[in-house]
Structures are given as structure tokens and as C-alpha cells.
Length: 321
Image 1 (cartoon, helix red, strand yellow):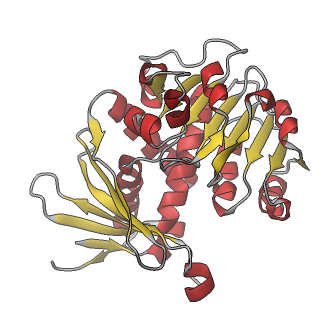
Image 2: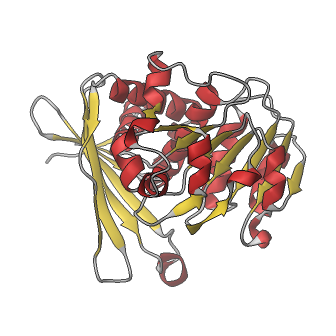
């Protein structure tokens, strides 16, 4: 078995590599060559932790495995380690033998950012100039860096429930040489692309806050009950997602479906746009929305890519099992 420790991931996996891996696996999902297994996510009754498994099989890339981990809300305060913890395990699809164990914390951040940037690349207007961020936590910095690479943005605007966190994304904008402006939610009407990345259970962004022609990537809703945007906004948009079953059950679309505003048939796989079987954006006035729920195949794709890089650079640790 090969081991790629968490400490090595930053030097191996680039945003470009993550984008390529996620784009390919989304395309494989839409063509029926890859599928995700049912997600397990449980409160374990210890340290207020949520723990679970995401897995799948990509026949096109011959990638089989799972990500194990979850959220330990007391980690940072008690143990000085990040609250999200995960590890990816890859298996040989021919024999079932374990092939690799890969640190999953940074990979999770990179693959989540890659998913939203893939949606921007395929769905945002080509002339998009203003980048909007709803949320300014740790993951928002990954989202913004990846998003800014997809269009010739000229300005970043941001809102966060706790304004004192906005310097996180202001710093990223400055790194990119772009001006940053903190705005109220109503100010998001100036954005051509909006990424929302919060852990909210009540909508912040309303339909009235979004202008025609905007592309949104809603990346924070991955659990039943979570919600970042008003359900009416999905009714006004053409909705895309990583996996339809997750979108309507634990993703942003769960609320619009429950309220009867859209149906499951109104939610489209982003991979169909990548494959060319869905036209994607049809006009400059259309609102497009990507519901990024996070699927196991994303984790496996970036983990497989990082294993290849680790082997190439002689960093992978080989152990007998």
C-alpha cells in the first residue's frame, strides 16, 4: 500500500490538477461510467462529532475507494487541529486489495473549490467582471482563488454574517491584484458570479439579491436542513449539480423540491454540460446555479491524481499490508 501523508499534499496537488480531476469525474458520472455509493453520515455521540463515509467507482479512471472522516467541532479549541478531518482510501478495482491511503483534509478543500470553478468555467458568462463571495471562512479562500482563475474578473465583493472575517477573502483579492469591497447582501446584485460557502441552516441570499445573467455556485449545503439561498431563487434559475440524488435530498435543491417550486427533473448534472449533452447557459440573461453537494468520486479523483504525483516525485511511502 502507498501512503501519501497530509503534510505532502500541499506540495503535490495544484488547483489546475484538482480542476482537471474533478472535471473528468463529473463527465464520467454524466456518461454513466462512474457512480457514487450511498453516503453514511452519523452523529457518533462523542465530542459532538459527525462521522461518515463517501465512496464510489469510476470505471473510466479505474478508481475505487472511499473517504472516511467528518467534523469534530471541538478540535481547534481543545487539540489545536482543524475541525474537519478525513482520509481517503483507494483500492485496486481488479483485486479489491487496498492500494493507497491519502491525507484528505487539504484535498477536500481543493476538490470543493475545483467543483465550483468547474461550474464557473462551463456556466458563467464569458464577460463576467465582478466576483461575489457569500461567506468568508477558511474554505472561502480556496473557493475564491480557484474562481478567480476562470474569468477576467476586475473586482471582488463580499458579505459574511460575521464581518470581522472578511479580511480572509480581501487578502485573496489583493493577492490577485483586484480591489475588494464589503457589501450588504443587496449589493450582490452587482456580481456576475457568486460563490456561497457557509454552513447556514437559514437562507441568506435571496432571489432579489441576484441579477439576471448571474452564475451562482452554492457550495455549503451538504446535509438535510442546511440552506444558503432562498428556494425561490432555484425556481428562477437553471439548476445544475454534481449528483442529482444528493442535490434534491441533502443539497440546496432539497428546499425548492420540498416546496414544489422545482422537480428532480429540473436539476441537471454539470457533467452533461462538460460532455456536451446539455447546452448549459443559453443566454446572457439566464441565471445559472450549481448546487455543489460534494460527492465521493471527487475525493477519489483528486486522491488518485495526488498518488500518481507522489510516485513520480518519489514521495509516496510504500508499506506491506
